[in-house]
Length: 297
Image (tube, rainbow, N blue to C red):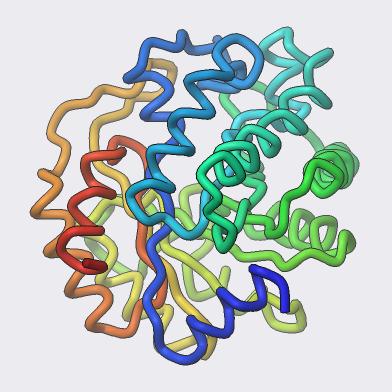
């Protein structure tokens, strides 16, 4: 039984799992400059020591899954940023840095996941281009040693299906993370259209063991969990975000939920049956530390 199989077996038996926190947030907080139109995609090339340390910090706090810093290293994003020549390197090195941090700490049970998204900051690409780009990105990460794919900020259902199909072809397990709008009225909606319920229904016929609510504000999580638990029999994760963002402007680290308050919210979500907990944008090492102390000590 490999480390992923051991992890999934524990979750299926009722154990709760702590994953890492926002990697991009920590990259920025530690002084790595953003790449225009590509968030923090360049960290593995320009500041690999910082990337390595971030993964190590999360592992030391008890994270059992660390996600590569590859959310913004899709080929289309890198083309918009003028970094397309680094596509292979950034995706490969992003996974390798997480593995190296795990190995250095002899944290043999930690699973390294390759993070993939269809999010973009500038140019919309066709579905055909997305399929080819996802195919290439997934295989680079697989060759680098990724043991799991985390599809993050799934906000457009047709694009999500494309990315599920291409990542599943590698033979590695695939988990899906949905991101919902902030609006309080009506059924939870995905950022790019369609409801959360429709997104879950689109997973029928695909082997997806776990779905998450991620990059969704904390006040929205309970309503999303209502929908998930009414429409999903598999494992469930939550890694919410906090902070302010305006299109075309850098993330603003203001109004972020206090680590202890997030841990209290997470305790309630776990009490509702959530199997996996972590954090997303705005919520970094301090929040994972609070989760570990309150929920996993």
